[in-house]
Image (tube, rainbow, N blue to C red; front, side):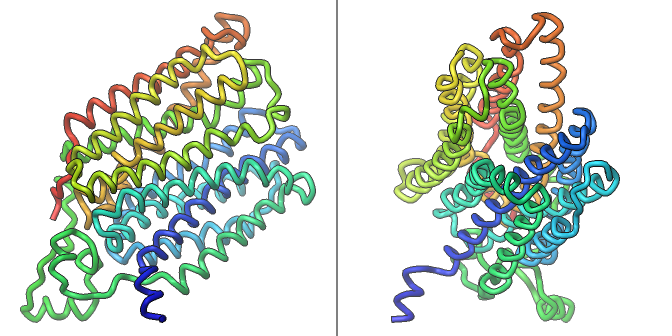
Length: 445
């Protein structure tokens, strides 16, 4: 009976579930800080400029650690780096005093949390590349990344009540507790795939073939032994590869649209549509729940196409990426035309939902083209995605300031056209680039 149980629930499924929970917890932390800090800062009379500085500090640390995170995961193993990252940011949250007037401490703490969390996604991609066979990668990566959206939705739903009844500091303690609990689960149940010389695993690009060389293997090589793999990272080939740049461009666009909507939709509801966020209730969660649903739909559909040989890996990635980004572009560009909360929620839900569907194209492609260096390629593309968030959020603020001067306020659709047209046009451009230059074939051995 125990053997039958293990056959029904392979270890790689447990790894995927744990990585899903990890992204969920990370986004609860991100949403939680903005909720708790905003309440504390408003109570202390902190101005909007200072609030913006503290809220954006995380992303600078996050951007700086993406490529180093991929390198560390490649060298010492994604499993260890992921655990270290969680311990670091959880400890910082636990120790951080939430005093809006102690700006230096807050800036250093948010930088540290950003750097620590920047190691997470490159490590996850390295772990999944080692554990998950190619025909399961789409739904595995989609499930893992959908934890981000479920975490954001859960944070929006539950954390304001925690702030109301227990105070802003309680959010940090709750986040630290979640991080520690996940770390204990990961320490107890996660492992590297068994080391073996299985030729099918090596040929398919997953399994022990992708693990860092351990001390005994290194000694064997030094004594004249051979190895079918090298640990030298082909940095130049990665940075001049057109398929890699196709991923980078699409990651940039995805996060530009996501962060603009995450940060500016509340302003659009309140000033563009003259609606009260409190009166909208749980409907504010719908765009993120839609991302959670569509992300997993995209993964299941992609693996079905590949497993049943309906489409090749290359055509599957291009098909889902194109559908997702083109529909999202239409929804983004028509969003200013909707003048009711129902219409705006529907349109933003379609935009974010189909962007999440498109992740079954570009976001899984790291492991198609470079399974051994998936964490590094993910680090490169996620750096672009983080910079897109910084650029998009700041540019949108400047566009709205200009629109306010031109139209006297932000209640007209014209005030918001440029805000949503820019990510809409980027979606079209990115999908064309992905169609032209991406591939589902392994190009890095």
